[in-house]
Image 1: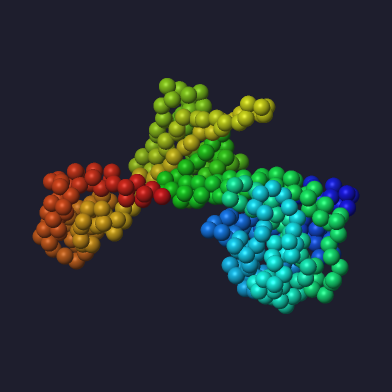
Image 2: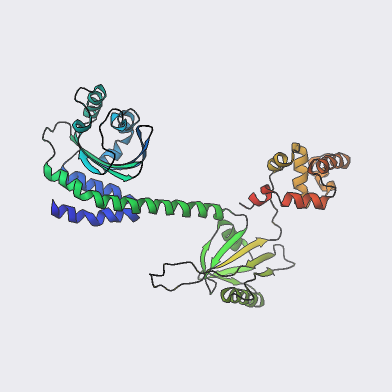
Amino acid sequence: MDHFFNRILPDLYQCAMQPGQWRNLLDKIRAHFGVQNVSLQMYQVRDDHLRQQWSVRDSWSFSHRALHDWVVNNDRNPRLDLNLTARPQAGVCVLRDRDIFSPDCPEYIALHRRLHALGLGQELLLSLEYDPGRLLSLIMHKPAAERVDFTRAQERFLYDLAPHLQQAVESFENTLRLRQQVEMLSHTVGNLSTGLLLLDSVGKIRWSNHYARRILLRSSHLTLSRERVQCVSGETHAEFCRLLECAVRGEPNGRRGIMTIGNGASRPLQLLVAPAYTPSLSDEVSMEKGVIVPVYLSERNDVLGLSPADVATLFGLTPAEARLATALTEGASLADYANQQGISVGTTRIQLKSVFSKTKTSRQSDLIKLLCMSVSAKASLL
């Protein structure tokens, strides 16, 4: 047992960074113990009931998960009802159902009938208080036909495993939270309708969002050479390198550098080079700290992309009035809009007068400014 325990500890801690390894770990425990299944579950205590937050299963349980969830792993499982069980909620304990149910409990009897129908027999449960209001549980079942009970050595194995399991799960949950945060940020920033490049000090791309990649693919002004951004024009590239160098040095006074590439071309490109920043690292870790320079890209013929439905809701406009208002922010004239909609210019002027009244503006420039400052306009960048 000691040899096996020492052998699986590296696998256990590997699960913290590689969640896909949990199943391999549980498969090894299942094979070593000769049991039918092993699963790890996190529960939250809520209203005298245990609510499952997450679970991982061995391969056999995973392949039968639909049937198991329908028959046992649901709110009808009496193990989760704290009013029916004498389950300790503090500390670490290794239990069997007979330790927490009275032998004549109808729910307990019905549970074991359902388990037997699934091919699951005697159980051994490690239960530990993970943090206030949450319980971590590792449970295994023998095959239904086996009558030999779990041994003291197997119980001791679970007790010895408990502190390592708690540490591994803590790291595992931290890893999941970080991955979720990175995924949410990547999704949000990745879908900006403004291109964003994160460059190192020599112009090599460290990260780019979806819109920036689209611009790089179709732009006639920029190219990539070994993941380094380069301007097609030598003179323009020299100016870009100067702005990049100033951003790295924090000159002048941390101000942003702005340039336009391809004035007079069909798709001129605007670049904003923001001041560089250095990602923070622990002072206890000695690593070279590279700088990151954010570079924003925009093609001058991009439109704001206001939603007429949003504008109608924000300012109490009719759908027709909202369509007119958003068209004005995109540079359309009243005559152009009337022609596009198949209505007279006079009708368009009447609609505009109503829009002015509802938005408390009196000029098109004031109306456009109001719409461009709205939350809908800011959200249209996403």
